[in-house]
Image 1 (cartoon, rainbow, N blue to C red):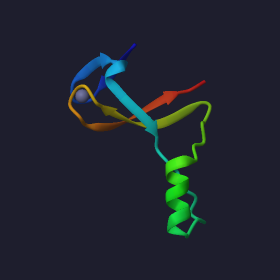
Image 2: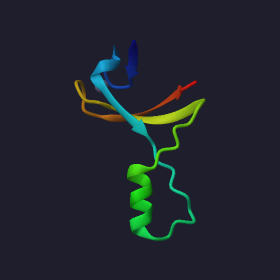
Image 3: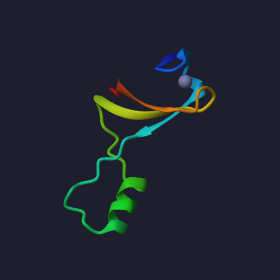
Image 4: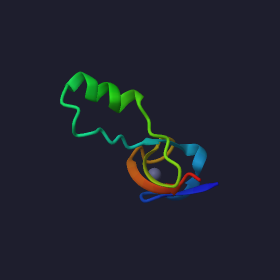
Amino acid sequence: MKLHCPHCGPRSVEEFRHGEIPRVPDHLTDPAQRDLDRVWNRTNPQGPTTEAWFHEQGCHRWFHHERDTS
Ligand SMILES: [Zn+2]
C-alpha cells in the first residue's frame, strides 16, 4: 500500500507512523484530566476520520491525512 507524503510523494505505508488527532471535550477544565484524555482515551471512529501521520523513514515531517476506517 502506498501513501502520498505531501513532501516526498508516494511512499510505502511502512515508512510512516500515525495516530488519531485527539478531540478533547471543552467541558474538561482540569489540565490533568485533559492530558489523560488526550494521551489514553481514543474514540476508535468508524468511517471518515482525520489522522496525523509522521514520515519516520523519509522527511521526518507531520501531515494530516483523511481516511475511511470502515
Ligand atoms: Zn515525506
